[in-house]
Image (cartoon, rainbow, N blue to C red; front, side, top):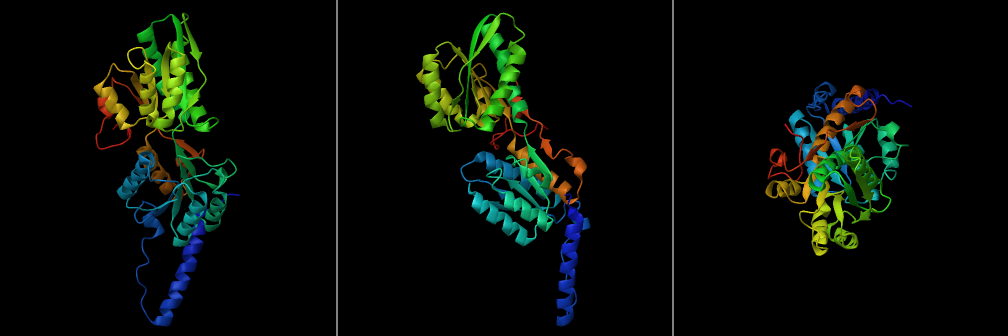
Length: 358
């Protein structure tokens, strides 16, 4: 069923006007200002965006995501109300109900669980409040009742790092022989790790596969729970067992400290290793600036600031029912890859993650 959000909003506004008018007649008072009109909100001025965040505490990535949204909202005159579920789906559903009760114009959801917010999506639909999701996708059954999903294309972004790693491997190791590659992701079976590694492998093969004298030996993927201390052991073990390991792909910059220490303990950190990564963390950018010939040679950026800013742009489009802004209900932001050659261009000391290049 297609819901006409503008009609639903109009109905709510009409009921509100009737109630207010009746109260004013009884009190003998003149009507006061009722705030910005829908026409004013159509430009963003006075628009109230409810933002249900899966978590903020302890994550610079999520903090940057929200800050990007708040900055974009300020630019158009909108206001964001952020509620942090702190990793609790029950709490997130309660937060979304609070936003409905407050009468926000649009809701942005960074979902803690893809199916766990189903009741909230239904409640928002009943209230005529459009929904934009960001970073975390929803179960396909819920997508028809949303306006747009904003994220990076993880496979395509991983491929950017893979292409660079392939070119660096040819430069360092030549066009003949065997190249051993290992990836380290979050958890066995998680979709994020699969997408990021499949993309990396596709990008790597697109370069290395053109060399008839090179063969690629991909080792079993390791998992570090997205934490540096958890990544150390698996990388140390695989490097110890494979002293001819040449390429390591860390599927999150957050794990890089543990990856480096694990390789050091195995005696492999140095000129014989290429490390590629994912996230576009400013620490990684600085590392490549300071040590351009070191192991770290690429980080593919997923740009949380830009994801947050784009989510606000889609929230305004959702309020205006401008489906042309997100015709397929999914909008992938443009991502990039940072290397020692372009690191200085992207380095901003005050930022935690790379933003889109101006």
